[in-house]
Image (tube, rainbow, N blue to C red; front, side, top):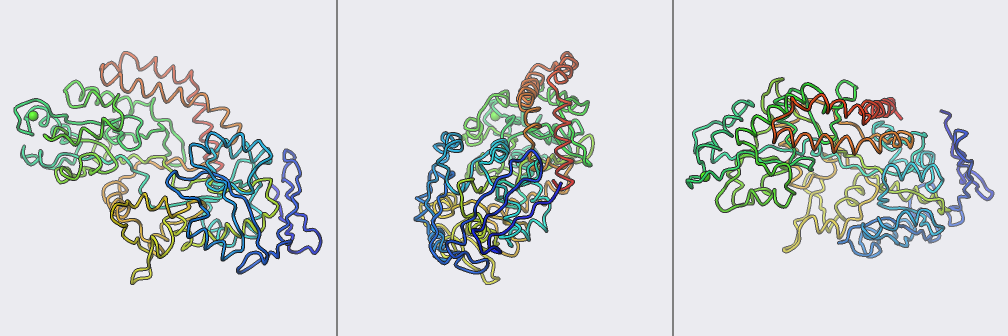
Length: 535
Ligand SMILES: [Ca+2]
């Protein structure tokens, strides 16, 4: 692909017409007159413009957030840059309903901030010229972001559409805690009661569940214990690591893993079948909660909080939310059990790199000034404030010069405060930044340690990276994927409950073929290869 050069208006004494001509024949050659110079645009330092420039910012915001114009950080930005923002952003749900109409109208804001755009919407609105390509603006006017993208080709690749353009700016928070959301806990008090050690193998774990089912560990004379409960297709309650231990192959919600650069569909292999058959046997032994396949989060989370404890083992993000503070000491993290193929920790496809934090629209006559404005947010100290709120309100420096959270006032939660004072939007906090610039919130730090100790050493697959599919690729998979996923989920549940995998397996594999599973995997492989080769 030919590289496009951004002809900066700054170098021209005349009207400053910026050529944003596309690189390929499919792009329409468009010229946007950059009028930043009319307001006394400065290439470096502050303010960004000598005369106050007003830009309109649309997009989404949290229901708990005030008018962004009243946010302390936002006021500070205006004073620093001399760029005034007319906020026309809307609460998430309202915005979601109106965004498509807005994108097609002539009343586009200059900027979309927290754009709420799906990948398909980014690609579509980039291709039709609603969103302005940013890669040359970044190179010319965004030294902070350029430096990060040079150092982190994976972030650049995640932002780059298949046509080679970057249409949105990122939001990145590398806490390292999303890869393993499904933590497995067990009732340690019951293990002690029954004289059992903490299980380390899948066999010992099975035997503990059998003891929970048969030996009345809660001591009420009733067979009311639920040895194991989980959910399917949830954020953090999935038994993927058990399928892996019993069958020998990692699994995740997408049934899509990467091993040695190869994209694999997981749910039609012999290993997967073996995992499901083993769970069906456990079900027949009464070890698995029958509601595992139907309960929602509310019903699930209530199970851990009964007055008489009934829950033996469960999957969830953390224990307190499941069992409440009063029972939290009864439960211990199991982590990864030694199974038929050793210890396999299933890596999820959850992403720490989000696209769509900000976009510049075709209505914007000041892209150079806008990009300089955005680039300030990628300074690591500013990124921390964008994410958590301003220094002095949410963050303060500790003795080591690290930004840490100021404790919240009584009656307020950290989450609520964050939504009130932190605008979100474009920002990058890397793993390094979490060591050198801003400390993770205490709960996040605790989870990092648990991941590092219990899960990361047994990582069995790579996650599918944050690849941006092309329109053509999205067309090829968008109908097939939901059908494939529903079939897999439906059969997973019915096979375990009815113990009839053997009867239906061949027909199921054939049906998956018919639904186009190999084509879907080929599309994901193609996009993966493009991503790993640098966009
Ligand atoms: Ca009992």
